[in-house]
Image 1: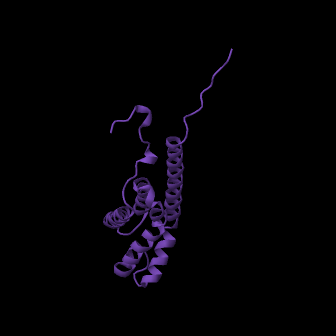
Image 2 (image 1 turned 120 degrees about the horizontal axis):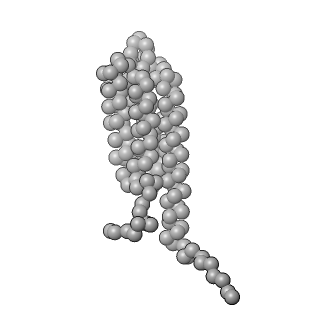
Image 3 (image 1 turned 30 degrees about the vertical axis):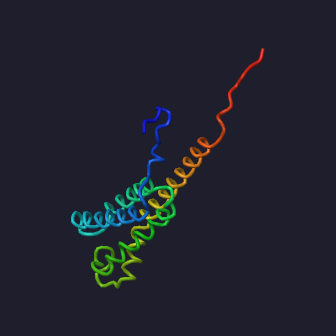
Length: 153
């Protein structure tokens, strides 16, 4: 469908992926960031943190409006799942090698709390902006035309 130049969709209106697909993509990308960081640095560190924040931004922009809640709760759950997998299989990447799964998850979360908080806040802010833009666009489409100014005289 061709739209006039003034009606192009903005970045905030573009997301159209179902929540389940965004969650699967987020998990795959987070695990890929772990593998990349581990291969380059030998542990999960700053590269993972940067990738995690970028991942939070990408998921918030990609999801369709009906699934905002899914992505709104995704960042902390995603980090816990990734660290639980690492704690069960390779705890030395996020904690001391002798730590159990729970201790490894807690250590991983505490070491990467900055990335978690930053990514989560940015994700929620993007979702809030998208919701506001979408509701304004819907009210413009369904409302009466904008008033015009006339002068008598």
